[in-house]
Image (cartoon, rainbow, N blue to C red; front, side, top):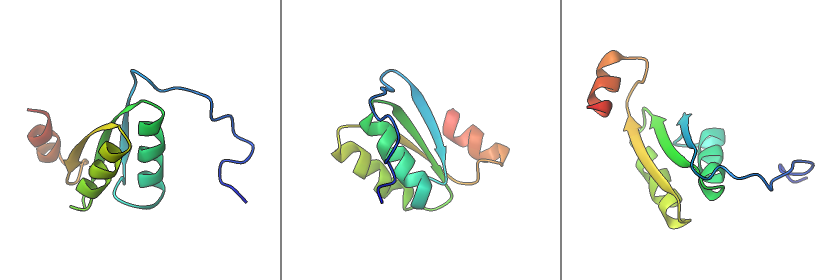
Amino acid sequence: MSYTEGFDLSFSLLGKTAVITGASAGIGQAIAVMYAKKGANIVLCDMSESVTDVKKEIHNVGGSAVCVQGDITKKETIEKNTN
């Protein structure tokens, strides 16, 4: 069975920005790559350093991504990555 069976995949996310948490693996990674393929700019958030590998994967499929590595529930992480 295909995970995309029964879904309309003709939509576009061109010009949109998606913030994906848990982006370094599993569902988060899959969503980030799919959204990038659909044209979205991606903000990858994860505590793992491997989130940079997903950024490379997105760039390899022609997408745009930036990484926020750290615990995004902490004010310090947000300040560090937005200034």
